[in-house]
Image 1 (cartoon, rainbow, N blue to C red):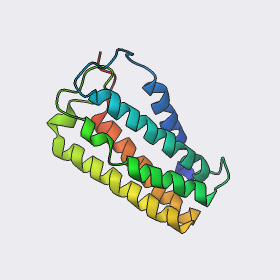
Image 2: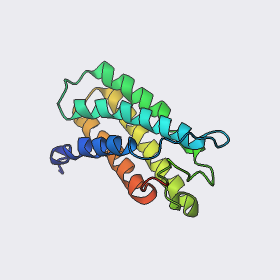
Image 3: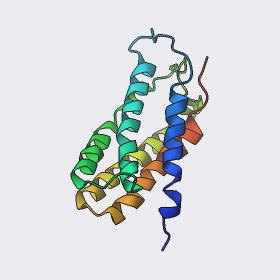
Image 4: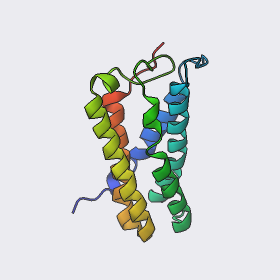
Length: 159
């Protein structure tokens, strides 16, 4: 059986890098109708702020508290479907980091969303068991779905 333990150390590095890079880029106000970039960035940052404490528990850096983890998993489940409405065509202006592939490969982008949403749903279900041995691989599956989507659809800030 494959052990995920050696790979758990990579998740905080990926998340930390995302946080650092999220702070880079333009601070220009989003004056576009509906402010889609501002709204999706806020939701994705909230997602990260929800996911990271889960990873800290999964990696044993903080004690695993089932009720706290479940609350975070529930919140992540709620957040998982929200950002996608804020990727309308033409929303690649600064500080967006969305690659043109988001719109050029819309079916693949939708598939990446679905993969992520399903992974989050599985994590939420495993969190309900309270069994950390089941939660760890589900957590890693969410992390991997984020990384795969970022690789395909997220790039440097558009200036």
